[in-house]
Amino acid sequence: MTETTLQHAIQEAIRKRGGLTLKLHGSPYMRAGTPDLLCTLNGVPAMVEVKLPGRVVTLKQRHELKQWEAQGWRAGVAHSVEEALAIITGCLYPSAPPTGAYHSGP
Image: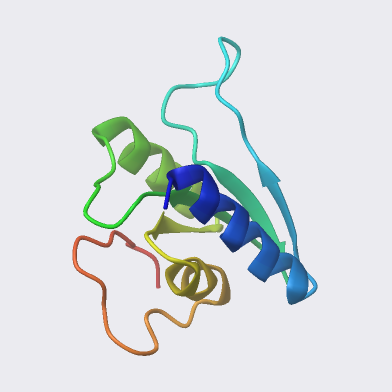
């Protein structure tokens, strides 16, 4: 599985639940560390950084996620579809916490 494949699976899962999602592509006009996906589900905004299992966020990515959380958004790193949905719904890790996950929200 590639990170792009995982991003597509996350986007599809959000859409199937009635949510909206946009892939944010890096460019010279975008700040370094901007999360991969802008999402909303049931009116709740979220930013999700997608990483393959075993991969970790950079310091810039962690800083960006914290900035979005400071504005009241849900934000975190997802290594799976389940983790992404947990970040967005606020129901963190219903089965078991994944190793290496980052989420500093409520």
